[in-house]
Amino acid sequence: MIVLWLLLCAVVGYLLGGFNGAILISRWIHKEDIRTKGSGNAGLTNFYRNYGGLDTFLVLFIDIGKTVLACFVGGWIIKAAGYPDWYKEAQMLCGGLSVIGHVFPIWFGFRGGKGILTCGTLAAFMGWQIILILLAVFILIVALTRYVSLGSVICCIIYPFLFWWLYYRTPMLVIMSVCLAGLALAMHHTNIKRLLNGTERKFSFHKKKE
Image (cartoon, rainbow, N blue to C red):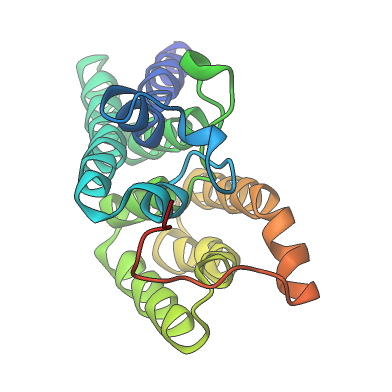
């Protein structure tokens, strides 16, 4: 029976994750689809480059909010079902599937973002130690190189190790962190190629000029 409740957590998390903030805000406010702009990625960096900072906060609110909501809902479902010992696993499962829903949104033709912000939000929810280390690494890499993608890739690599450090007694959480990190890395394969070729675009605090 626990399997059915965990499956429910997964489905709810995936459906919540499908509400991609960059796509929603670009359509609602700018009457465009962010996936037709810039890199074509429905993520925070591409949104910022094309529309600037103010609307980016709305994207942040949606993508962070849906991931946190998924974690809370997962925990609530499993507790209400009478399996409190599975509380952390249900939170991680529901939050993790919201990341997958963000990357492959059912509401938007399965073309979403790369999952970095949502993975980071999940890490923050599951352990403040994890997100502090990830943020420190990310900020340092981007400050030194101005490559957001490089910071994201490095964080993806250390992501599961940090979960193992904090949750080595809970294998399901570690396994899920490996899967999410692998997915995020796979979504960055073109960025990795451009980094290796020296053609990756550097980050700027000024949005793209039309």
